[in-house]
Image: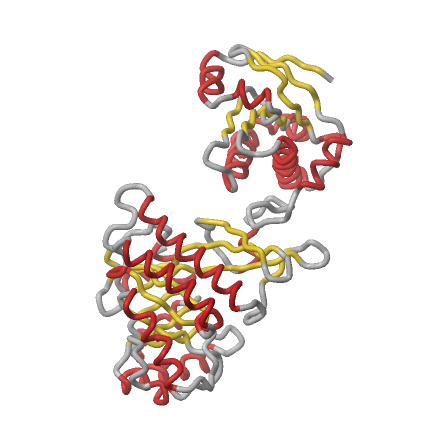
Length: 421
């Protein structure tokens, strides 16, 4: 079905500057309509309209490329321009956007409610478009890959994996078995209690893989090859380097903690790849602001082996910390390994009372060997205050992040801030 839609002069100028004419010739411009939602809510449309607009624009931008463009052209229609995607991939993404929107506002997705048209011509004052049929939409669905930037119900998909804030970057890597792993990188504030400030952030990662039924599942710890761990580590380090390209004032003065799995440091080939990335970081003047956290350390790892690995990391970073494995660990056996600190993680399976007792013992042991005590994964005020009282110096977790906010800036943060509403 062919249709012609008029547009305002101002929107015509926006589309022209966004390269609509050339993209339309390549089949990369689409019109999506939320008219079915308007019809379903009837007289309540006045209240729903701004919510629908916000949802559509936010959902589109969530996984947008630099040259992607969206603009609302009338009460029900939005124009999408995706000039760096293949035509079928652009259609697939437009279809997914409509499915998310319909599911969120109507609770169900019916094929007849998916109104998408491909723009055939744009002349600055109007567009000629052809309605996309169900057959073409079915083909587009086959092009769609599950990822962390899309969801079926309109919710933020990363929330399923314990990420309470939108990811700052989504990446994919190819595993040795040919499967694709996807990961989101985001930053959590690290509260330095001794300084009464947040001056560093830890680069957290959630890695997932599509299961047999197509649903995304978390990657089991230790399930990847050293090469895959190294690839993920390299992308995480590049993510940190890209922070320097953020808006002015976003990163000056902050330090970043980057977790590196022992699995990619214990094999010479993968370790050399990671050290090469660290060398680039040092050359880019990140050394004074970069900390490495060695994760996935075997509980029975010999002192000499841990010392050897830390010695290879230290020339490129400000300091190395060790994230302790779950279960009781004799910290004294790792004394003088070269690490500046040890990191314990809250075990959600333990009661808070048991966790507080464990924190006390952990703080005593770190004090005996003269290293910094850090606790990650704090989710409650009581556990946060107990860790502070025990002598833990660095705290991080959802509770601290909730009170601190999303800003990636160094600023004062004291106990009184924990009581902010």
